[in-house]
Length: 77
Length: 439
Image (cartoon, rainbow over all chains, first blue to last red; front, side, top):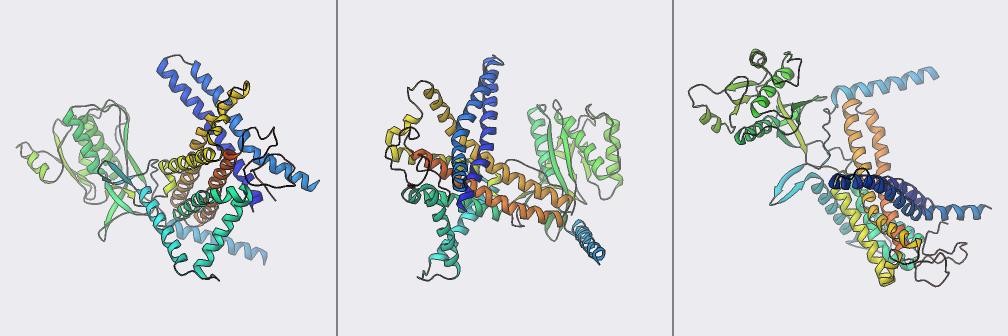
């Protein structure tokens, strides 16, 4: 049971995490643009930062899953 | 014979659907995203999702008390059940986090799991979203227009009031099966007088055969409003608009009936009150609403999980825990900052995942009770039971996985040095420890 629960949680969690990171980056960037009148500078920074956070955090989130894949492979092979 | 079987199944399905559509159809749901306020306690709003979460807490406490009241060495009944659940959870947590950390994380992770699954499943009870306080929409519209008239303000943005046709039955106000939700709209830039005219025309359109002016944007003319009034007057079941009389005692009468008179731009006079001899306009504010269909509750859970994870990180590593985020290791210093940001974004993603799943399920069930009662709702109920379990498991498991990550020594991937993280597994082929063991 535990063998599938963690990978399931990682996969389901990572999808939402990617979405949240990128959307928040865009929204916050857009909001700062509105405050400073420098459109589209901060929106672009927000997108870049959101993507970077999604990549780093997503890697952390998926590493248990990748480890689980490695385990299964080594067991079968 | 096979054909007969298929025909039989089809007959049952169609019959089931027909019975559902005839007797068990819900009114067209009015989807409100923020939790509805039942009453106010001082400066605090008492919302229906808060009430539900209290009821669930009470239920969990009662069940635990019953299970632990007279504990026996060989458990039976409820004690047996609760012990099985707890033993299962302990096994799961220890398998993933190792014995030492598992015992530390267990309380929080299991509490999160039990609390969320109880809330999700309890929220599927049939009395949810079904009964509650009825809001008198007419009164509400009147009060709002009166406030605008009193302060001599125009409406700054488009506003709408949704309502169901409801009737009084045995002391309760009940929405009819399959009742249509109607919407009264006030446009931006309307004065209170124009809003009143729009309201009269809206009532005539909804309660009688009267057709309003083609152009919905323009302010209604006097002829339109008079025609609407005549149409309402002609139908005995339609609402009756009482205009203030010329003697000037209208104000006094209006005060007596609990309403304030509101001005009408087209008629040039005041509308004192509106009588509803037949169906009324009302909206049910449900007394119970699934706790996690309110983003406040999910966010609270996310913050609690976040605080626990950070606490364990500091507890295990001291201030060395911060090295993960702040270091001077070239490109890794930037990655550290990104990791710090991702810690916070986790809270938001925790909150919105749970909220999104529970709220979507609730909307789906309400919509299907209106569109396809009985048959399809049953199927979706099954799905929602599964989603409720999965979401609880995902929330708890992710908390656990992050907690395991937080107590890991930083840079363990590179140096295979000693650690206090649990999950030791001698034949494990990978150097990361304190992490997922999936056997």
